[in-house]
Image 1 (spheres, rainbow, N blue to C red):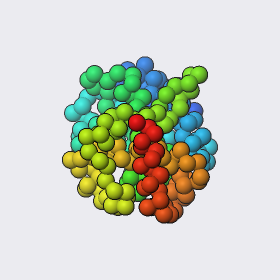
Image 2: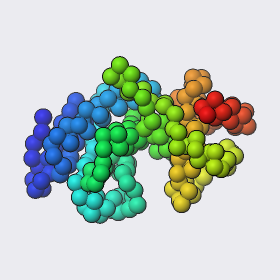
Image 3: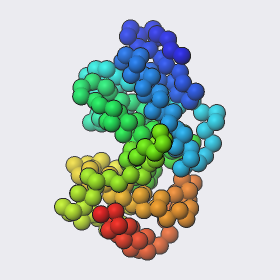
Image 4: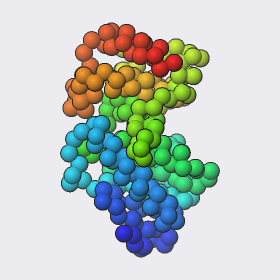
Length: 232
């Protein structure tokens, strides 16, 4: 179900779990709706929590200049896409060469942030938030269903060029460093460590979602490095 909004060119599409606003063609909003409903199903399966009474929100811009103005007001001036916890809304811009793969990865990443915030009240620690988002944005499709956790080959390439940071200081990176000039390396390390935590299947992901802290960081570092070798 969709309708035109008062702002010229803007439309609202409602799906079972999402309110999606945009000044893009209605077909693009419908495509977003299909993808987001699938990512919601998978987030519920992997992260748990109760989202039955929640309606999630997304916004799509057709003009990069309008997107930049909106992003700057949200404190995300340099972002290509973002989730704004203040408005509880994921935001993307569809101007330019945006193919289906880009849109899927981007929506998966930003919706992971939205799900963690809305369902678990978790926007930090930063390495965990970004690691889970990167984990969700690297997926395979099996029998028509999304399966997060595919190998991030770009991250492994970065690690071949330069060793990742030791785990203890990485887990304490402040915001300005996490999102600084070397953010790609930090995202890669966050992905790899979260990938390892998911592979353990011992409840550490649930512990972090509930606000707990990691035990035995040295032991986890040894296991993580062995996990990286297997991924290569």
